[in-house]
Image (cartoon, rainbow, N blue to C red; front, side, top):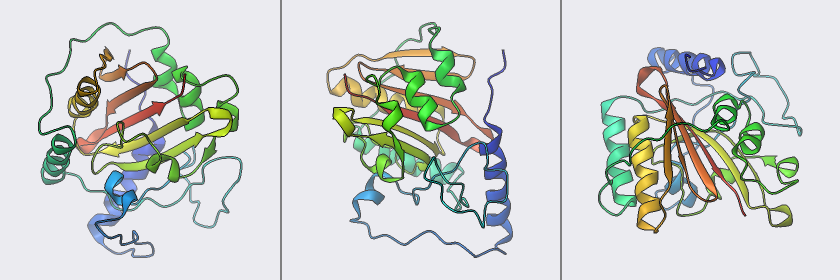
Length: 240
């Protein structure tokens, strides 16, 4: 069965690449951050949020909604072999100098389909089954939740955050983040597997079609390829 690709992401990035090519629209530029900025250290691109179902609409005059993520303009993202190489080099350094060989793939679980089909960060958090009862209902949206990921599970280097949500209410410690990266799904899975293995964990790697999932005791990483050499990554961390 063909893997459903979120069309809002593809439309947004097609428009973004067209704008980057012509250089005609300079209405919004990413904020310049210093190299010592902690947010820049975990998210190289300017962190943003979009509503995946509204990204293909003109939301330039829309107000921020308190009920969910706001749709805003995407800044240019680095793509291509140079960007991928730089991202992989940074990932290897974060992982201790090298990326370990990927573990064998096992068959997907029935619950994985819900993760694959999640549209919003809230749906992703619920589908992951990592949240305590009531935690998903308390999540709020904001790029700060991507910066608040555990140090052992950061956004992949040079990843561009598309949506982030989370909550610390009632000891939930729930994070759900979606980002794009210019490296392959295998590179992404290898990075998180190496981090987990060095911490003494043995996460399970599952695959269906071209979608991969790496699952630990209280976290999961779901990744799928997109056109143009990009990968879309969903990262969920919960407290048990």
